[in-house]
Image (cartoon, rainbow, N blue to C red):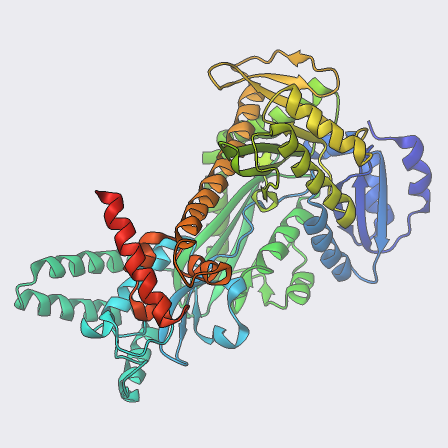
Length: 598
């Protein structure tokens, strides 16, 4: 239960002002961040009213709270978003899939190009012709590939001195080397932009003309390929039809709540067409309006904001409009209101269809994490797990994966090259964990509640020695995931007592630990293979006269493999190294690969 002896006196001092509050657990970790128009009323409500579900679990774990007064609710909203990003609290809605969506970008200068981009990587000056978002990245790539085949846009990278293959197959105008008629580019650009602005007939007629042309030339394979492209365009055009009287770019946001879960749905409508939708389902607290507003704020910080965003009237649309500099609105009648209802209906359908799946997922993740907490007698928000890999004592590496509340946090994964270049698991583990937690202390990074090592007493001793040296032994629990003679997880070893816990092999906890062990092993082995591959390439390049460390590094960065270097022309190699050295590289690699295949 909440520590009321500490909390009650602080409640009396809370001001009736806007701000952000931070709930903390017994270890002083921030477990929830919220915003309030009136701090005293909002924070007090957690401890005086009846709470259920996720909020009840939150209150049971509150040991203390802090708060920051702001001058307005808008400021508290922005502060809330930043604090949630910084601390990743356990009981907030956490956007695990927080990457920006892919867009298609057309640029005219210096050469007309069409490509798939991520919104966060788009320079503002280049965003004039930006189309999307595309929820399905492969669909975006397919559209770009199709248009690049139909129109002679620039496709190669760099600026070659001679025309490339695309010019010879009539898929490029040779922009790098030829004087191009600007009127041709103007007409091409006009058609491409018209297609993205809703005129499907432009592309459909273009495909039909090319299909007939290829049939007349008896190139039936190419004609069939174009026929398939035509069917694809017709299908997506039919699916995208929306009953709206205008072609304004807009998003429609709505939600549906049931059984402690919220389903948030966003429709992306561009130029009168539905080009995609986003749905997320997650457990919520009783402050669900705050959850939705945070979700919207976090989403539009990473994605383009259209001309209009239609949303439910119960949200603070003025605050969202001002904080995100976007045109949020509520529409009470007409086609737009019908579309808002349609989005809510989709949110409901998605929740009803996936509710059992999400409940089961939580049991397998948060539920298993809670089971581990009970087993070890500690609160666990963050787990860091380590594994080592080497090849006969060489290319020694270690990998670290992170799980937060039962879910992998891939942005926090780390790779380590190890200076202990011999078969020394103890030395490797000690070096890596010392580097990791020394840096955490130096940079005030979040520490884990539990460290899991892929091994038994030897690995545990190495981590314990590190924690002792850094005065962290009392703050972080260590356990080992012990394998049996079949190299499968069999027991969990306590890092303090070295006793092993018997875990039901059919339980969610056992599968949870196995998933962590498999993930850290996969991550480490993948890094090891990459490093080993580069190492073998490096050793081959070491045998070539004129290749030193700098040139070797540049070649590896550009080509990545021996085969790609061998396939490159002398001219391509000469862009990185002198021509006489490039000739020697070609000769040596040709002889090396020829002898290798004998």
